[in-house]
Image 1 (cartoon, rainbow, N blue to C red):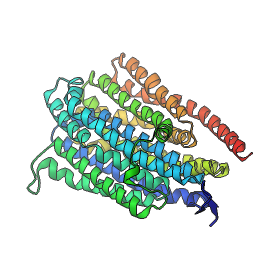
Image 2: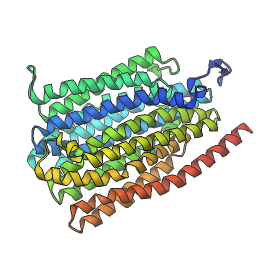
Image 3: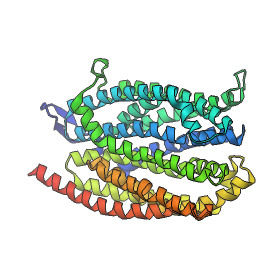
Image 4: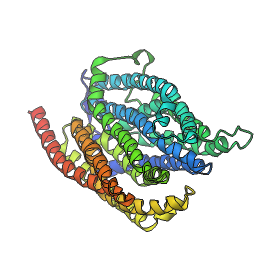
Length: 463
């Protein structure tokens, strides 16, 4: 394996992301992440399955909490994307000191994010739900859920950070172990805490939240231990976990567009809930159920995504555009294939998918139509998801942001609002298809520009 020299002139061993065949490399990095993401999707659904058995109000509370969870995930994941891109690129460019600063500053940013959300959850949890519904049961359940999930969000943010450090250096199998650990703990604790089994108190919706944060804290602790013991490419030091302006700026140069892009999903979900609840509370329950079951299709693609990003960032940093292009082509083909399978499942078995949430007859009738219409977007979304991450990995995150804003705020929500004016709920679901086609057009344009700019940047660097 070829050795090269870093920025201080020291000889370093070539990382596998620069030498292994692309297909084998992508499979080795992505498959563990896809498996762990599937397990994460499972525990997200298990949460809702148990909560739905309490009552539809309890299920609606968790569904209405989804924008808050999306916002936390946006900040945690977006910051991690910035860390991932900077760290992988720095390793590819043989800049070990910069890579270590990215890791240590990233840990500091994760802790700061957790502190902010803890304050928000404790202060504004009830206000958030009261603004959406006058149903006191939903407000009470939702406020309890938000106080726990946001108040103890340090596990979520640290889990994102430490797992991405493992992913950034190619140790996706270790990242999978941490995610599986968190997921299993959550799944085991869910029924115990929700229903008060084995001598535990019956906590209902608060039990679901407690199980979630317990899994996150355990996964974060394991991920930290694995980084310290099994990740020689990154050097975490307590004294270096502090603010570093230039590094934070570079992390958020890539991360902020990703944060905004995913936060837009929170705004979209909130807006869609308001449109749907004007028809019936069962429609919001369907929307919540859809997001749970679709995670079994989307989560493997996100895992594939997570495996792809460090490969692209590393090889772009190493000026190997042939490997960058091959990785992109292979990832897009795999993503579209997965999403096509998902489309077929949603078309053939919508009632079976909804039945796991103990739906009312009204919810089942609405949901079958919704799932069949929305799933038509899956193959197109498979391309758009990968394209957005390519922009981030190569350093053009603004393209991802523009595509996301246009899809969710400029097209989807206005289209849903206009279609709702017809008084026909089934037409509202068509807004997802309209928005995805628009996103596809933008993604194709931006992908071509990004690759052309990347080629120019590599030529300039080599000359």
